[in-house]
Image (tube, rainbow, N blue to C red; front, side):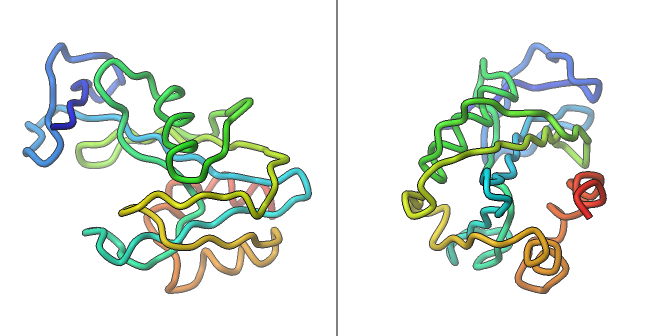
Length: 163
C-alpha cells in the first residue's frame, strides 16, 4: 500500500495520509514530481509508457516522474523517480514549474545530464522504450498524437523558453 502526505492547495501539509487508489477527499492534494531530461549535447529524453498503464498507455512523455511518497519532498521524489524510471542519477534538478489541477500539485524539474545515452534503463510496468530527440524533433513530437498532451500543457512555459 503506497501512502502519500495530504496537502492543502497552497502546498502546506494538511496533516493526513492519502492512499494510492483511494479517492482523495475534496480540498486535499497529493504531490507529483515530473522531470524533463536534457542531455548536455542538447538532446531530450522521451520515455514510452507501458501499454498496461491505465492512463495514456503506449504514449510518450518527456518526463520521468510520479507521486511523492509519505515524508518525501517534491525534489526527493523527483530524484527517486528519475533513477527508478531511467537509471539516471540526478546531480542537480532545477524547478521549472509548479501548478495544481484537480487533486494534484505538480512540480516540474529539468535535469541536465552527461549520461551514456545507451545506459537508460526501463522500469517494468512503467516504461517500455525511450527516444533521444534534438530540440527541434522534441518540439515537433510534443505536438503529435504520440505524446501525452496534459504533460505538454504543464511544461508549456518551458517549451516556449526553448523555442
